[in-house]
Length: 234
Length: 214
Image (cartoon, rainbow over all chains, first blue to last red; front, side):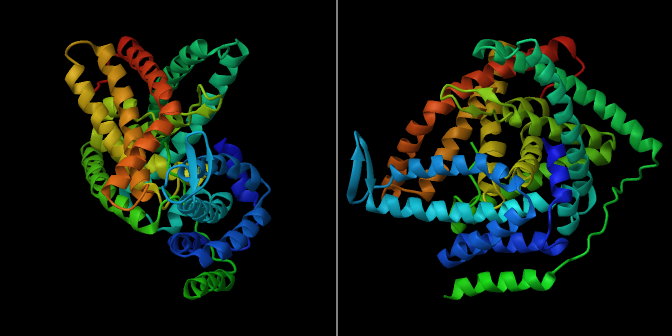
């Protein structure tokens, strides 16, 4: 899962690159939350950027989008106001519809900005852009590595359990999942020891090196941000 | 129960960040002290972080036909204690946003508060209270309580952001509605996750007695 994602991140076409793209998204997100015009501009621009970056965009957003739509439907039936439509005991009101549409737009817009970051930035690049230091950086990078190893491990275990019909029926699936997670737990501890040995063998001294990343098209990034800020003024 | 990116208004994002940050910083401080005592703890913490991430990415079959996932924090809190769990789950949640676009950066504070702090904390209390009587019961209730508290807190967070009408009463009415709707999926998930936690922790206790639980 994350292995293929990493190759997507490396191969995607990055119109804006380097630490500036991380900051672009981090600054854009609060702006998106604030104002409707910014949301419209951001939705169009970031969707275009993400789609241009990689076709994987469409696959990436399916799960978050379905969660958002589900949540918005719930909101639509929650808020009181003047009734405009009803199904049995569920009512849609003028205020609930307004809130639902606002939330939908805000979420879609924010997700499109976030997905540009997801599609183009590997985690080490993200961490180097936000200039994280010390033990936090170490734990986060080692944790990232551990996630990849464990996901790969888990995938292997899952496939072999599936091949033995371990997931036929809810009861069996639950039992299988619990056994898998226990084995994963054991493997995790095995990995800790291997980690330690590998680090020592490479003279690890507490400094996890990351590549330096160059900014690309910073002018474009800044004008994009300026455009968003303009939306704030309108 | 992740609140998705952009779902909350800016003032609520800031509010939940303000509540969650001190606890996460305290957790980070505890972790730092641990590392200074024993540098080997770094790898252990890193792998625990991976374990929490993968555990919360496990797919469970749920009644509605869709796939849902456990939070994994009920297990984590028994193994690592509440403050370390808060710290590790805040990073796991950030990674879920950055790798899967699940959850979000602006809602990170709210999600950490419900899934990383309050849920595990009450799960931990349940575990401590029942530990003396029977371990499996304690495991079961820790996971179930952690899951259910997370669901209640998330419903409250959503109700505060989307009250039925302005004022405290509107918030309560909204909260009851959210609780009612989410109960359809969350209650079965909590039960399944609790069974899962019991099986996992019993295996750990039986076959790896050197692993200490809090």
